[in-house]
Amino acid sequence: MNAAQIIANGLAGAGCRHAFGMPGGEVLALLDALRVAGIEFTLVKHENAGGYMAEGSWHATRAPGILLATIGPGVSNAVNTVANAYQEQVPLIVLTGCISHAMAQQFTHQVIDHAALFSSVTKATLRVEQGTAALTVDKALSIALSDPPGPVLLELPDEYLDAAHWQEPDRAPAAPNLAEAGIWAEGSETLQQARDMLQNAKKPIILAGLGAIHHAAGPAILDLAEKHQVPVITTYKAKGILPEDHPMALGGHGLSPLSDKTILPLLAKSDCVILAGYDPIEMRSGWINSWQPDNAIEIMHAANDHGMHGAAVRFVGDVAQALTALGAPDGPVWPDGEPADAKDELENAFAIPTHWGPHQLFATLKSALPDKTITTVDTGAHRILLNQIWHCERPNTLLQSAAFCSMGVAVPLAIGYKRAAPDVPVVAVVGDAGFDMVAGDLSTLRDLQLPLVIVVPIDNSLALIEKKQTAMQLNTYGVQFAGTDIPAIARAYGGIGEVIHSKGELLSALADAWDRNTFTVLACPIDKSAYNGAF
Image (cartoon, rainbow, N blue to C red; front, side, top):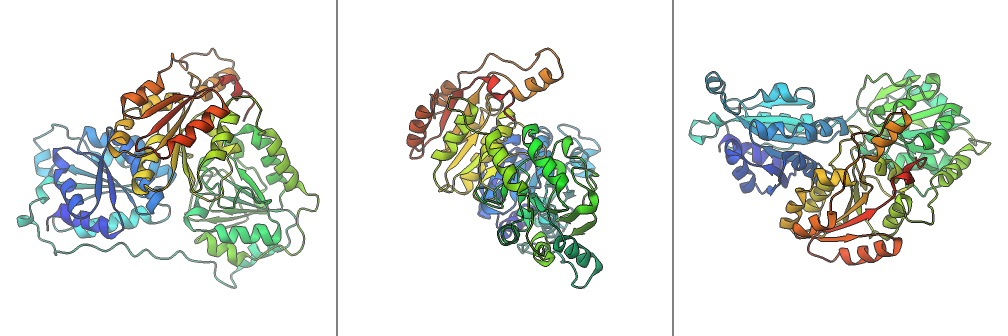
């Protein structure tokens, strides 16, 4: 086999069945090798969208996402989506070509230093050299999947595509055998100190993040919450690790000043804050030093050096195993009932008005979705409000960019998930500015004939940025636009487009959308002033 075939077989051996991208001359051998290896390729209209679709496929299958991009302008188009994967901890393999070192000395057409470009937004940049294809793809998979997961750039020089000149065993490399994370050593001073802290706590609380999702710590968190009445706060990415209708679930937080008024005082009162796979990259600056460091036990899925908070005990390892080893409080907790009061406060703060607006839009949408629906949401004011009122019953059912907070993610994320899991209902919520940014992705949806639903709150503004301008007492400038006829755009790309003005219209439109063999775009005009004080 040549190098491209060895790489493709290695990815297939790791469970990869989907790849996304836009090919060019230098990656055509890789494209064909993916086809032969049983990895289905989806043509996109922009490499950035392809990366988000690859992320969506990972959420659906848990196999690493694959983005195929040609050299130069192709791979440089993908910087945003790769940076997003880096901060959102998504195992993404970015496949591209490159020219040989010798040729680069005299030939410069489309040639840039890919490794230098991606060095700050990938876990590793790897280049296949003579006889190393199997080793390199194994290494790429291992690095991408190890804690914290992330993107890896894999370059294949065109000089190594000829099997006659390729000296390597004819084999498909196996998926990496990752070492299991360690657990606290029984009898260690660290574990005993943490156990004593929790055992003696009268006001313990769990703050769970993405690492708890990676390590399937939901049952351990449920055990502490249910048996010992320990309340649970999550970041946006960890929403649903404890079902949010559970009495001990206080929901996802991080970007809402309104919710901070309830949640941050609760953390400050706690005498034992258990940080379960919590990464503060999702949080706003108001969360710096939000609890007394001497009261915190930090269980990290990967070491970090953020400096946003302190802890008396810190441990890097398996989050679920560490929580189980931690024990439980010795006796009743929160005797004054502050967590229940906080839950009531949050319900009142984000109560749904009776009139049409973003609150009613999101509440109605959630109530009408089929069971096991996956929802993606784009960056903007709508995302913050949606996260506060949207209750998740399971983890990984509300997908978003919560660390990098990039716009233009919701639609391609949804496409990638639906492509990999066609029987699962998928809906994307994207602001009107974000929709304009990725309108070309609708042509990919058209070609795939997938019954995807896209909901677009329309306010003709970058509403979140406009709110910040107002808060800074600046003029409203550079954030408003005339608006696009979004239903017409949907129809032009072969979908169904409707304008929604009420709860009844939304319920009727959703009822018709799921059985189509094409996508549906629901444009929902709202008054942007409804966001004032809403979150």
